[in-house]
Length: 336
Image 1 (tube, rainbow, N blue to C red):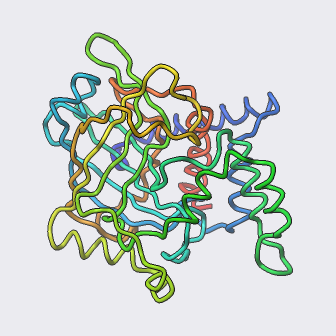
Image 2 (cartoon, rainbow, N blue to C red):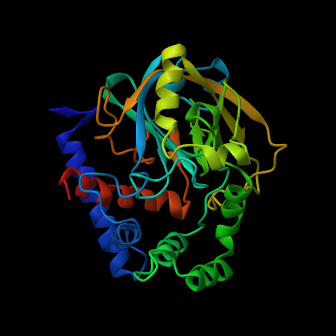
């Protein structure tokens, strides 16, 4: 029995592994996945059967075709040059299923590439060039600081002030979000892999890379006036309508790292002058509400689900995402 490309056994194993990692972290006094998911629930509430983060989302389907240039760096079948089926999910950061599309929060693009022989490659990205935490502790502290005061229904200003003063690793992403209005459509935004990964070629040589998906429709942002007048939900309808007009495409651009570039801190951007290579094109042909039509909702877009030719680094936030996703996934599948 398969669920969106995963066997039930594989899902159970992923959940068990994630919970085991979380338990091991607790034994060592580290931040655990349970703590983070509980903090998300405390800040945003719980919508039964839904993701604890990036709850509001939209599904899409299409394919990805790699370039010949990519083969120089990675032996992954993702870059074979043959079309690879893709299931995508676009989303808003946070656990509010009714979050306004005008919110100055991150937008997400999650992809499941369905490779030959039943193998999978996942990518989970944001439309910010850097992340807002160098360590899981920062993300946990942010969720705790954002928890609404029962008296006001809003975060305690003093708690947020204290958080900002004590967590400089959050500043770069927060500044980007404050200075850049959200897009009018998911199709008009770039999405960044945030973390550093390793491309492994046919000889076993590993290259540090960061990737992003750049929209062929062009990067666009709402004006301040449009931000004030836009309805609370427009992104899903805009993407569905856009796919009806024709395929929506993004170029996958890989930045090649050099010695000395940080590989374990997603809050630090690499210099713009680094070599950049187009390694493929993502083409989406249809979009739908996440509970209807083509349903991306059962997929756990764990970014550590990787096929041969792409490997993770020791970025602590990247490594933490897998157990955190597993805890959320287990609750969601249990309709909790």
